[in-house]
Amino acid sequence: MLTKIGGGEIIDPASGRAGKGDIWIRDQEIVDAPPDGKADRTFDASGCIVMAGAIDIHSHIGGGNVNTARLLLPEQHSAHEARPAATPLSNAGWSTFETGCRYASMGFTTVIEPAMPPGAALHTHLELADIPIIDKGTLAILGNDDFLLSMIRDEPSARMIEDYVAWTVGSTRALGVKVINAGGAAAFKENVRTFSLDDVVPSYGVSSRKIVKTLQAAVDKLGIPHPLHVHCNNLGVAGAADTAAATIAAAEGMPLHLAHLQFYGYGTEGRRKFSSSAARLAELVNATPEVTIDVGQVMFGQTVTVSSDVLRQFSARGTAHPKKFVIHDGDGNGGGIVPYRYRPDYYGTIQWAIGLELFLLINDPWRVFFTTDHPNGAPFTVYPKLFELLMSRDARNEMAASLSKSAMALSTLASIDREYTFEEIAIMTRAAPAKLLGLADRGHLGAGAVADVAVYRKDKNIAKMLGRAALVFKDGDLVVRDGEVTHYRWGRALRLNPPPDGAIVRRLEDYHQRRYGLSLDWFTFPDAAIVREEPFREVPCRS
Image (cartoon, rainbow, N blue to C red):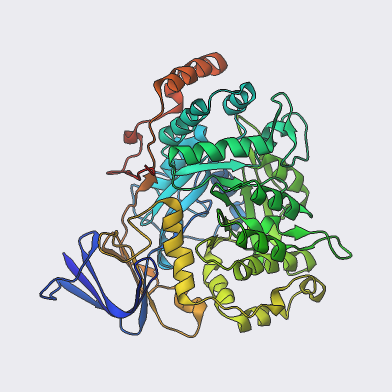
């Protein structure tokens, strides 16, 4: 099947295409135009903008914490349309099925679940396999598990650490590694309630900084494309900007990615000792080219915070709205579910402004990524409104006028004139995520790319335009027309498979037998456990 998407305004920064043109698709792949210019089917994209399918690098869409949030908040579940039969997981609540449909309707075709506990990998992949249309990926959590902390304490060879990281990524079918409040969950088990970058984990004698640097080096040495994905210490605390600044400095020339930086953009100025330090952090990011960040924008309204940062969630339980929460401990990180409502009061206004400041003050759109840390800052369904705020100074000013004036006085947002262009949006949501994750087959519209294409009908109302794509193609299939899903298909999970040395496998087998009385086989699973045709697509590591 040869498909032509004709006459649209192409915005494709990765391949350098800009201006009116055609996109050609043969089956599942974008190809060059045929010599005879004949197509089996043609879609008219005149009056439209054409981009590659969007990529979200940090969105909590599957796994134990997400499922627990559904169970905790049945009263907040919206009614969902009936879905096709024979899908393996429950349709109750904010379903996995609805997640894929909502993302696709906005032109997103790849989404990364950024916090997968290795012990829950099978559960996570079963949920992700139930999400239609989009491709998925996961980041495996390390940095609080006894096996790793014991190795760091005992100062083994760097190769042994690398082999453990390789085994974890390969056996869990992950796309990278995330560290969450490095050492903080382990310290929490020993009644520590505050924990910073240079604090030491009791019983192990290793600092949070040492854990981050050890994992950063291992990820880089293994050639894992995505840098270590760091959830810093002291999330949400006034003065957390100092921790973020110290973590940025700790990159020391080696790639490092900081997650949801907005939640660390809090200073201590003003009468309430809570202010914006976004300008300071943006300046540091601009001056540190090896660091990338995603924002974690706050938008107003009810949401639920889900996190494997058990220390932070335990501290935040008193702010729960409604007044219920789940805090759980376990091997590695544990975690917590705390519902929360962001209000347009002083504190909410500061948080809202900080995210926008980071977006607008970090100069390079290749190093700042579009996220709300779904659902922690806001559900991903607010993305169209967030695009509008980034692309329209008038929209920002109009909203800011209704918010806390004392909060806005401690922010630089009102003085920022910058407006994102469509090219910058395409970089931030397509080309840059693909580059960051090592996904050479997507994020662009060049020949050889997977045929993930989003077509948007031009409209002065940016939120309307980007909230309901005119056409979306996934692997060459037309899946969305005028913002409505017209065809269901199953995406795949993108994974790495770095080979570990056999010695680490034998050591892990011995560890699991001694600690749990179980074979290592209990903690791994075959591809066949995911009942989908070709459930995984392997991504190569850097050579």
